[in-house]
Amino acid sequence: MNFTNPNNVHAFIAAVRENKPIYNVEVSVEPTLTAILGRQAAYKQKEVTWDEMLNSGERWEEKSLKLAW
Image (tube, rainbow, N blue to C red; front, side, top):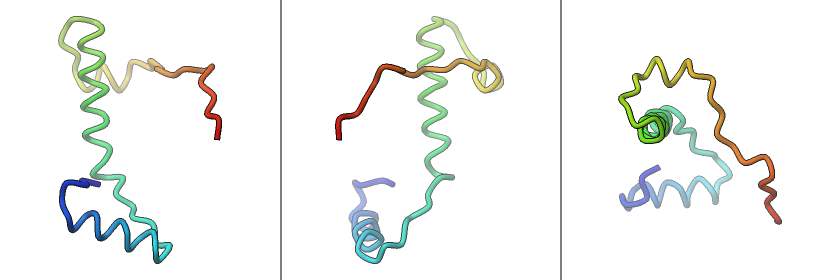
């Protein structure tokens, strides 16, 4: 959700107040994958294709990360 657009902010607040989640997965997937693609290309210091990224099987996670809430 783009919070720089006032209409999106109002829609988000209404969704929270009315307990009606906003499902915007489709608009979130492409920018997230684009960021991952850029990160892989930067780490490998070479061009990476969408297929290479999606089929790489690489996992980037911090197993020791524990949230304290």
